[in-house]
Structure formats: C-alpha cells, structure tokens
Amino acid sequence: MHTPRTPRSRVGRLAAAVTGAALFTALAACAPPPATDTESSATPLAQKSTQPDETAEGFDLDALIAAAKTEPGITVYDQTGKVVDTAKAFSKKYGLKATGVKVELGAIDKVLRENQSGNVIGDVVINEDLPTYAVELLQRGVLVNWVPGDLKNSIKPEDRYPLTVHYGPMGWVYNNKTYSHCPVSNIWQLTDPDFAGRVAIADPLSNPKYPYWFNSLARNDDDALRAAYKQQYGTDLSTDQPDAAHEWLKRFAANQPKITQTDEEVSEAVGAPGQKTPSFGPISMAKFRNVAQKGYHLAICDGMKPNALQAFPSAIAYAAKTKSPNTAKLYIHYMLTQEGFALQLADGKPSTNAKVPPPNDPSDIKNYLKQMAPLRATDLLSDYRTKSDWEDFWRTSHH
Image (cartoon, rainbow, N blue to C red; front, side, top):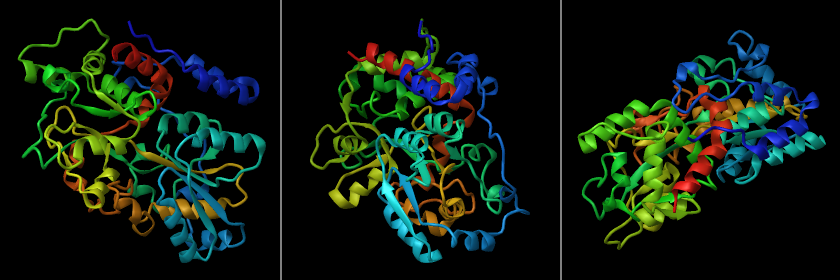
C-alpha cells in the first residue's frame, strides 16, 4: 500500500537550518493523515503572530507610503515575467524604486540561502509552490506573512495564511477547431484505450503542482471520483488502492500519456493548427495567449467531471531580513488592488481580493470559476509531506 513519508531532501535542509531543529521536530511529530482523510481532520498551518496594521483600525496607507519613502528600493521575485512591468508601474505610482525579477526555478532555495547568508536580495517573494513556501519559508520565519488591514475583509479567511494573491487556475483543454465540443466529459475516460497516447501533460516529476493535485483529489474528491466512475461505467469502483485517486492515477499513468516539460508544450500538443487528432490536456490559463500569438485553438472542457479546473494559488510575503519592510508591505498592498493586479488578469488569474473584478481574458475563465477545485490551505502540510510519495507512485505506474 502507498504509505506517506517525509521528502528526504526538503526535510534534510529544514532540519539543518533550524536552531535546535525545533520546526523539524514539530513536523515529524505531526504525521500526515491518510490520503482519504477529510478536510476537517487536516492539520492547518497557523500564523504565529500578526501586526497592528493588519487590522482596519491599525492600517494607514498614507503613513505606510511616508515610511516607505525613507527606505532603500526593493526587489520582487515572481515566477512570471510580468513582474518586471508591475514593479515599474509600482515605482512610477509611488516614486519608489522597485525591480521585478523573474525567478521561475529554484526560487525557494534561493530565498533560503539569502536568509541564511544575511544577504537578502528578494524583498518580496511571490511563488506558486504553496506547500513548500508555507512550510520552509513562512513557518520558519524566513518570510513574513502580512495581510493589509484595509483589504482583509475582502479576502477569504482561508486565503490569508499563506496570503495568496491569485488562484492560478489550471484546466483541461481541447482543440476547438478539430472538435465542436470537448471530447471528454469525465476524467475516467482518460484511462480508456480510446485515449491511450492522446493526453499531454507536463512531467509530474518536474512540476510540483501535479503531486499536490493528486493529493487534493485523494483527500477531497474521493466521493466525486467514485460518482464519476459510476456515471461513466454504470458500476461502483472496485479497487485495492487506498482511494479512488490512486486508482485513477494508476490507470491514467499506464495509458501512455505524452509527457512534456512544460505547459507551453502541452498547449502546442493540444492547440497547434493543422492537427487531425490533437492531444487533450491540462494547462494554465496564461497559455491561452497562444490563441492570438500563435494561432492555436484552445478551449476549456466545460462540465468535465469531477472538475474542469484546479486552483494553484500563488502566495505573497516579504523577507524577514529586508531593509525595506514598509516598501515591501506597500508592494503587497498594491498587488492586491485592481491597478496593481491588472497585468495578471490578462493571464486569466483571478485575484483573491473579492473587490477586484474577474479576468476578461482569452480563456474566458470568468465563466468557469465555479468548476474550479481549490487547493486548500488546510491540506498544505499533507501536500508537503506526501509530495515524494505521489512522485514515487507516478514512477511505478507510468511504464
């Protein structure tokens, strides 16, 4: 049976870096729940303390701006190139210096090393590897979670720790030039011989969002997966696996999916023009830019069971050792406003601030948000602890 175990490389670094190994001891004592545990039994990570300006009464935007003007400029790390122009717009608005740097790979390790050396470059960090970000950076005090007091009530409680800036939807898509409607309505179809070799997916061993997604399916969607199975085949699922998610993944991995390195390659396999039998697969909504830029044909698979979309939120926080905490806070505030978040909206990323309107983007994501499964904050420790186990399960199933 698939038994969760702690990822060795991550915990090794964690134990080595924490004085007295206090956090390592706490994590080791909190054994991850079985994959089929419900959300209510999950162990949420908790914010250790808050600051006075994280309340509406304690927040003063003018005072924050004035304090920021006495500090050095900041550098912002993000996984999207749009951080460059966002930082420039922030600088222009407030008369402050901010530099945006795209750090797509190795961002968490980079931030850890900067903290340990005391040479902090990234003052604000935005990252979509939410479980690792929360455990290795926030819980250890490398980054500071800060929620602007004037915006707090517009952000759902579950999105406040870690503070997430957007939901980052990934969705199942098809080629709407070849097909008049989505050829798949049920995730179990992807395990059938008809779809052998016809599904493209970015390598789950190189893209941590996939192990997290598999864990979310196991923890939260067992009933929905079983219902989808019965809807597809007319009988109840019978399996020797721990849950329906393991059974689905085992069958899917064995059905010869096309493995790519990135979502970009998946979008090509699905949407490139001139294909008689294009692939089907999951991509981030940002790849819908290829419709206009490359002539691709892409559409979200409306109504797919159990979910057409999965959320992969990006968190935002500032470095505990920054020399410019007020400027960093001001940038976080800016990113949670419609003005500061405008460039992200173009990529189909809904803001976690309910007052920011939904994206009006090429994917038309605003019409599908009710079909998006959340990546739950209560699952983050489980996601972190079971990542290597899901990777191992994929390895043994994909042959």
